[in-house]
Length: 546
Image 1 (cartoon, helix red, strand yellow):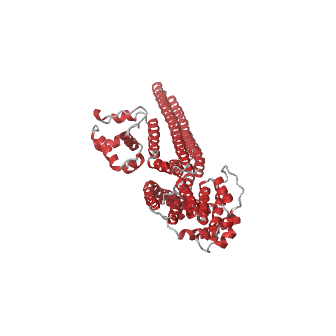
Image 2: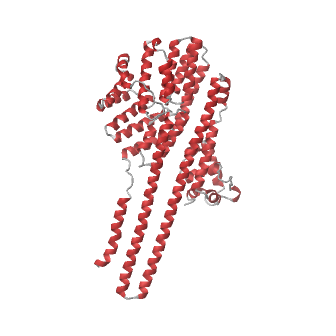
């Protein structure tokens, strides 16, 4: 009996060794997973928040148009620029430059001109246009003519500029400006003690001194005075995440980053860092969610149209691709482990068969056992070949998906840059009438939607090349659809998303840019033409290609 057990113990020991070699990535803790689930809800509703923001901006623009008094118009346009500050770089820049012209040409008010210039410099600094910010703030503003209040705001902007430049030292510009610490004494004196601005300076000062416990207390005090519906909440929560990271409290850091990202979604902020940081920090434990967050952050950064955020996000794309590659390597290790295990089991079975046959001295039984071993070896090799083929296909589809995603963003960047350059030329030429006409008839969203459809069709058909043929097989002959090669029509896109697991009609309508009633009508029309039970039609669609 001892000789019989030995061949069976050998593969068991090999399995344990192989499993230890194919370790899975670290999993997220339960509290982080719960918070990420909440964040998913806010991300899914971001279109609602953006629509609300656009309604507010439309009302402000109408108020500007209805304000004849130049002083009131200046104040109103400055408020509009403030609302646009974290939503659209181009719109903010447009209103601030118009306020400069209004103050210089109509009001002849140097204080108001300086105020608009300071805030325009602040915009450039926040957007990563550091050379433009430097030229405006350090070379074009005459500080000897600034009032006390204006000087305070000017120093605050220079302080923020220095902080931003230090935090993004990898940018192209190399500017020799004073560090943030040099501005703090003057700001302490000028700002009202215990105001939010004063406490923000104190928090930064404590962090620079590595007094993180006190910095955390000040940060929480700032957060206590705000609500998630205020943009400041996202900023204060982000700083608390930075403090938690320096103290080594990674779970708390993730919690603050997620809360900051939720506030950004609620306030329809397009220029943010928190969601990108969340995406980076859940790699490689949750590759798919990380990629989804990063794609949303890139879309918002392109919409905002400043150069800082896309540059930051592009660095993380390499990490996402590395995570995908690491997952594929793990899958291949499992396949290799399965191959070795199958070979060892077959060998052990062959040894056992030989031992049994020699002991029983029955030639017929030995032949039967050998044939059985050979059959199992053949089946194992076939299964291994099938698994390797699936891994190869998965690699190819993944690579095509990443390339399509990157090409899509590249095309959008080229398209937006071309349109923006033309609009800037119109502004420089003073052709506001043509600028407004172009804005009224802009086709940017339609072009972006067409590009999304093209990318979706190409990627989905690469993953499921026989989808159209198998889908038509579920329909009556007069209801079958035959789109151009390499494309899908609207009905096919609806059920392609269902095949991918997107079952909620509201989510499908949002992704395809249609109304909920339109998606419902497409579903009902197709199901009415289904072969067999119409109630099980969607379940049959989900099985296509499996």
